[in-house]
Image (tube, rainbow, N blue to C red; front, top):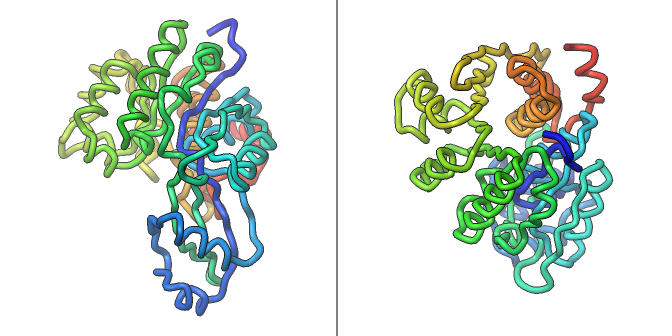
Length: 329
């Protein structure tokens, strides 16, 4: 994996997370269902955004979280995602660059506004999320920077994007460019509902274009329509160079054609928020993988990063991951 400018380039849903504290009665006034994640339209998004109090605005999305972890570990990361040339598009661009990730995707000048997840946090710490997907779902093959893909050791894609035909074309284009350049391709299946909706096309992608697969237990069982983890593990070994399969508190299993490695979960004093656990597992694993570490070490790095992110609110690391890894490994 020599002669590369980046370790990992991520492709994903470019979403701005807007977090604001509110009172319990605000949820009722705004007709919001506490603790729910609701998909909303542009008009509702504008209305809710206007009624939010002061808060935090930061780049989000699954692959965005993974790239934040990559940067926090000290690796070189870049990101491809679709935003609009609007206020939140600028917020996304500034924030992801500020954490050390290269982001030069050209913003759309027409079409849907930048995606946002409006998060209302009540005094008890619970989150009520309202997501407008907007521009991020309009990513297509023209948004894939072939030069950038060819300059990265691994191209990492999030399964959440797989819904639209244009995004599928973009993924296949990115995978072909990467492989033509002698690089590797990775994907996270993201969500078992995504897999259920697109099982055949996901299988085709995994079997023909993917070197490193990330999935949790539910996702991998759904992909192969089997009842047990062991059956799914046996199946995925036939098709992927490497699969990193996470199992929550049971840790993870890393499989290749000649190895099956059990990796324990890292101890966590108290689980606060599991948002981003899979995203940060991928950060740690790919950090090790692009350094040439053993698969067992890659799995351990994934576990360390996942344990950090579930120990607090939010899907981005709070602790210094470089320091944490140096101390723990």
